[in-house]
Length: 392
Image (cartoon, rainbow, N blue to C red; front, side, top):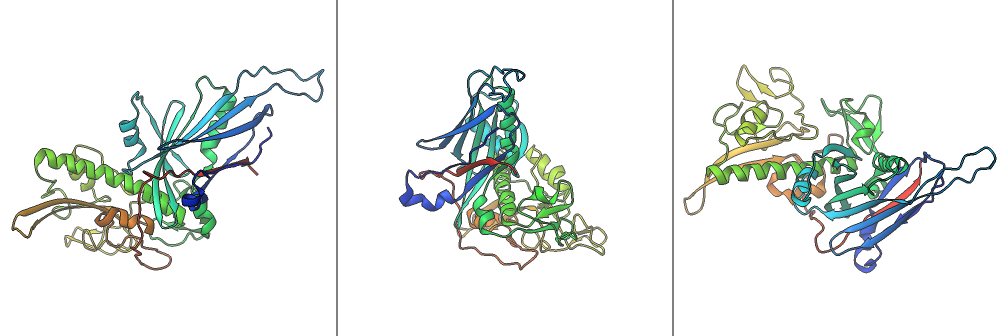
């Protein structure tokens, strides 16, 4: 198969959004059928989304030896389309699917370049983060192929998913960082470097400290925070209160996503299985403290404070039920949830939902930069560029 390198970007409003075309997505596809000769990419700019369309032309073979090579009937060209929709509420692919797709089936979960995704039939929905300068935009990439597509087109589609690289602007602007051990945040003894968690190895006990990996995990945290907040708000609307957790947790009124009470008490009260942090690990606990929960069962104490003082370098979600008094002496009841965010572009967007200690860098220092903003694409159209090239 012959592949031409094609780059597409939104130049319709170059004067305002030139910097936003820098986030070029790269796809490396390995040719698997010598008779698939060309892929043509078209781009149409629409009012509230971006749309890319690939047509796959399947042509008859042109054999070098016409006497021995068979002719192959191929039929009409197939298509692969990519549509980019704003994810204004930063929800998960499943929640976006439930809210926006009228005819729903039984989708399955998967990852595309580390981002959470959902597949229903011939369509995949990917919840992505697009970092532009000091801003983070969350979008849903909808990738699908035409009905009754050939097996060749389906194979190309699968290779697109397996080789798609988002956030190439981050990769271009930052160095590869180290794979770290989940257990203690120490560098991988092998000195392995990475841009994504996948490069550290599946089920290896390692995670990637690179900026792209941190952004990818924070996009999932944004979706998880939204899911938990929605569940808490629904509970409050029904019960006129938030889960108190007076019993069933190490500390009354509090829970951490690594504690048994996260599911057994808080999740049970909310009537759902709660998401947990992508890393979900408390670190630095030894001696009388349990290495997983950081709880000292003998002395009944936690190695830190909840929610604002988890052991440095930890990654977890925290819930706290609190009652305070307003200026007019009325009672203020809150069910607060926060996450330890890893990227500076995600902290201000979530406000107090970024736990104290967010943006901890286990390699450098525990510094929080909080003068950045985050938003989702709404009025302004952002379309990522696209590169298709033959894999080495």
